[in-house]
Length: 302
Picture 1 (cartoon, rainbow, N blue to C red):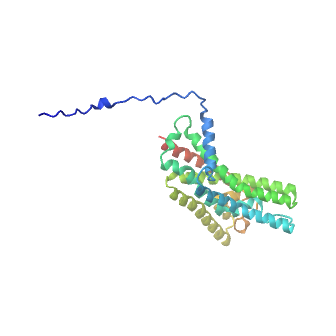
Picture 2: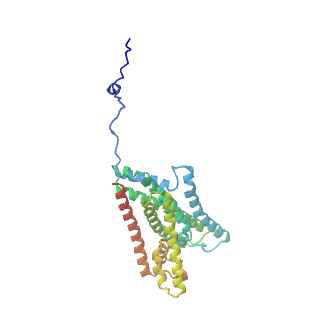
Picture 3: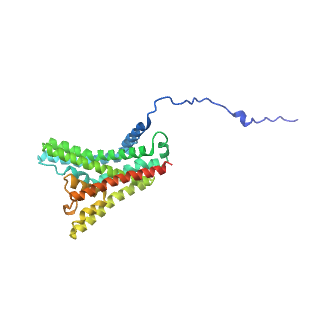
């Protein structure tokens, strides 16, 4: 006796159409300006671990504390001893604490850009309405502001402490303003260099090592060459050698224009004429970093 076999349903018989309610967006479109501000805010918060895991907050917050602790100690000593001046000038503070600055840039610049490159999310940013220039400007501005906060916070501690110690108001205000100008230029330069180096590789570890190498090795090499030139009696060469390291570049600018005491060997800081060259090189380096970032992200966004 023949057994009837069940007939398998055709694939078309299993097709279902579901109305999941896709609708067009009828709300306000905030445009490029809002997107740029949001990216800037998110990047600035991320530079201090805000909005991220607790582990991400430890290093940037620790470095901020490390930057401020020496200033607090100096203020306490000045108040306790009723000193006539602070132990360290405002313009010298960032130069002395350059190791902390280098570590901060090395840790946060790759965090700002490497993840977008590694996970290939950059083209998503460049879909409407944000453009390449918006992305680069937001990242550059956020890293510069993060560095400015890191460097200006201890100067503010010094200034408040100096006023509490009843030091001369006019002198302290002038020194504080000069210090802010110096760290603003330093923040732009270090942010540009850090972002350019970090944007070369999507690997965060490689980016950290490269930033540390560029900032620390260049300073060590320049300082060594300056010392050799000073010992051999070539004092005139000392200022020109300082053009080849970011930190000595800032030192030269503030020595020439902000009345700072030079940290160069023998105090052989640049003259006013040489300071013009220092300033042009510093501004040119910042502009070059911005241009390199634009070129890099135009390629990535294709």
